[in-house]
Image 1: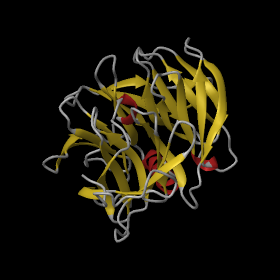
Image 2: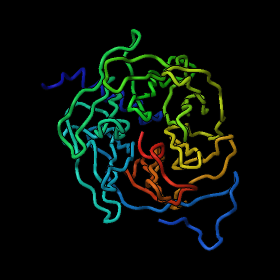
Image 3: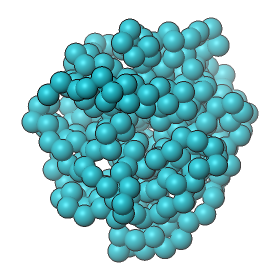
Image 4: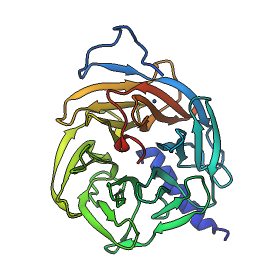
Amino acid sequence: MRRSPVRSLAVLAALGALALTGCGTETSASAGGEAPVGSDRTIRAHQVMQLTKVHEETGMTLLEGPTFDENGDLMVVDVTAPEGNPKVMRVDVRKKKSHAFHTDGRGAYTSAQFSPYDGRLYLTDYAHGEIVSLAPGGGDPRTFFSGEVDGARMNPDDIAFDEEGNLYVSDSRSLSAGDAHARVVRIGRDGAKATVLAGGLASVNGISFDTDYQGLWISELTENRISYLRLDGKGGLASRHTAIRVDAGIAQTDSIAVDADGNLYQALHGRAAMAVYDKHGERLATVEIPAGARGLESATNVAITPGGTKAYMTVSGPAGGYLYTFDALAEGVRQSNGG
């Protein structure tokens, strides 16, 4: 069905808010050229390829949600892709080639992740408050969840799956400073029941389990902080606290990934970089793109090769949407592969 002009304008407004407020070969120095691990350590990321250009229809491009499929290809979403352009791309990072995986005339997808339960690719549609899924090879689109949770429609941003396939969703709801109405929502793996795990949060964006699935790391964009939600083992919340206050300057906290050693990779919206912390909150390093790269303003997310340390970071700005790569501090696991 053709969307009305009013509905189309509403979607574009949501995309504009996302783009304005947030939603990785080798390191540059080898053979001892890097600084030791610490807050002043810089890891240089290198360009792999350009994936998108700024779309005339939306005036922007914003790459997100990198996640590896079972064949080792990287799935990437373009949040602001218009109808007819790829909204989900499959990238062969070895051959540096990309192909359209999915497009439609409606979704504004901000993350992607494969379910450990049914193997399907799950996408968050920020603009319409829905979560949809695709067959592993593409096609067979299904609406997994739609509607209100505790009387309010979601603005789902990122996803984390537990080991049984239940979804934990960052529901940003508002991108305004001082508006603490965001939530973390738990949805059962069959999509039948959705409950608010935590509320009163500030524009929740990134979400990832820790290495042993005992708790969730979440980033609150408008407060530039990472909070830790300890789970009770029964699908509920045991406690929550502010874990890390991110010194990001004009940038804001975007998506989060966690490696096999429990290190956090905090993406920065408004700066083409990632801040890396250990689980105790110590700043270990900053991942940066080369200083000469122009027109790239945000690093939104990262996927680390499962069982390896090669990391692929999505970077976007007026110059287009790019993939950059760097060597992570530890191997990739499910918590560093999508979301």
